[in-house]
Length: 186
Image (cartoon, rainbow, N blue to C red; front, side, top):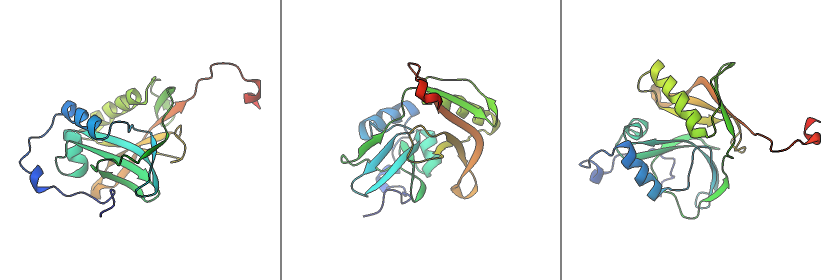
């Protein structure tokens, strides 16, 4: 059996299939994958590995990410590196950590680009900026620390040879305290 990080090739039965729109692909993804979200950290019992979801691609973006029309694709980061595939998830996958609902600050270098209540909104802002700079840009979000769900993530775009390259756009999760903690200043 192939590892899910092995690049997938078009399946013969997919050749005549009509391409899904991004909205249709989201519905298929929700059915096949469901609980996985960008920034979430999961453990695969089957492969005995922990991974972080770096990007989820739908419709035409999935086609660009994996080179064939699967409807959706997912980019993960694990100890072996970054891989994009469209392998369905095992029911034994366990959630290790999900990103907390907090404030997400996108920035480019030292220039802050606003604050958002969801990571999706911050990613949408950066994705829009990247696509204005380079039409067709396909960002994946790579974490500084794979084990920390609140680690900053940087937008990387696929360059030559299919290797993600850093863009300088970073989203930093900022945890907002709900009360004053005097010990936190120490």
